[in-house]
Amino acid sequence: MLSKLATRRSLYAGTVPGASEEARRVKIMNANWIAGADGDDGDFELMIVTSDDRHHVVAPSPAAMTALVALAQADTVLVWDPADRRLIAANLRGTMPWTEDPATPGT
Image 1 (cartoon, rainbow, N blue to C red):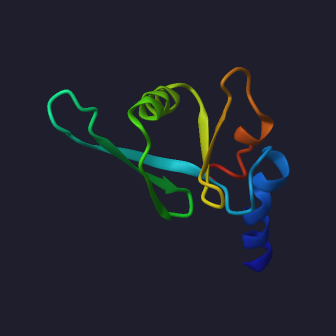
Image 2 (tube, one colour; image 1 turned 45 degrees about the vertical axis):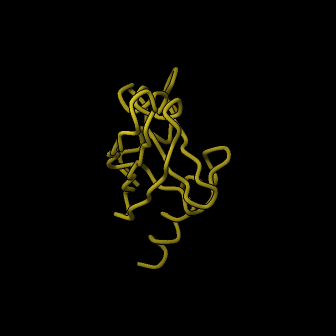
């Protein structure tokens, strides 16, 4: 079990530029919008659930939220790295080999 866990921890760190050993594939993304005063953009809260079932909450700007929705709807693979609050989007064009590995779906 320990060797499987160690492999899982280092999967993205060695193959995805910028990823730490804490990086995990995004399983679920949900957003809340808190309305502001008339004419105000309001506030967004984004909950990210990763493949290890950890929940992460961030508060992106309205402009960033627009980009996040576009990435989530595209044919991409998203990886969240809580070490530096980094969202990694793979397969924007082409396919990264690590996203097709049947041995690591959702890892």
